[in-house]
Length: 372
Image (cartoon, rainbow, N blue to C red; front, side, top):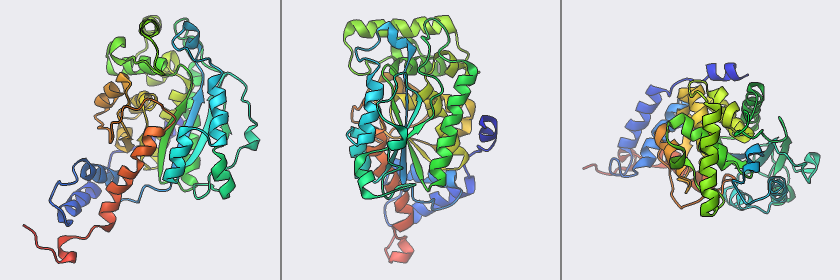
């Protein structure tokens, strides 16, 4: 599945991009007055291969959840059981991502790709999907929360400071889970996918991944995650360095990097990005976990960057380093560091607006407006 998906990924369509640039120049506004939104609309036209591109709707958030063996190194004060407890919160509709998704009219799919603690919910009991979204059901389900997909590859990664976090087969299985979820959401009608994540301790492997793919020092890309104190932060930086020194991952082997120092949710998110790109559907990236996954996806298929839209600039320093490496400019900057897909959801109206301009704004000729 991975090789077939990568083979289906190609560059942006230049004629469609040229048509979008030409249309932007004829709309009733000064040329360039919408700034980055104009560039975004052109890129989305190139992804779709048409001008104007389809409106990016409905939106579907995919939250991949996993736990981490490196948690044992004291990189966070939060207990590992919180990962499973937050999944229950997602399904009940009580998390920030649920509130923002209801506001945006987006569906939320939670995927257990590597949670260590047995889930306090029955996957069969979760609603299929919020109403009005891909696979939507009734309004009661929409209020209740999210749909849960059971796709556990293993119950948490190994401690990457001791051994490789995953075997190569486990990393591939997680990537292919993301590809499969992307296909299912798109087949159900999604016009844009939003990345989400949940995993106590997952900013530590994210920092390791970003350090490998960007070449930055561990201290430059390791942040405070959930807000750790100075002592825990220093320990966290040391843990990232220790893992990199022990594993020595090769950035030319992205699947090997994911296996050495990644998390199951990072690998699955990389797969989601690849799967969406192969279908020419945009992916709106959330924070540092998504940025780390995006680096892996780009290493596997460089043209995948064409489908990526950076939703926001996370407060985690690794996110900025990753986006700089990918040459992606974030749409909003609010100092967010929650994850879950929250920043991507807040940026969603910006993406929709960029495309809606090409669909709905009159040209100078059609509106009878004089040009300069």
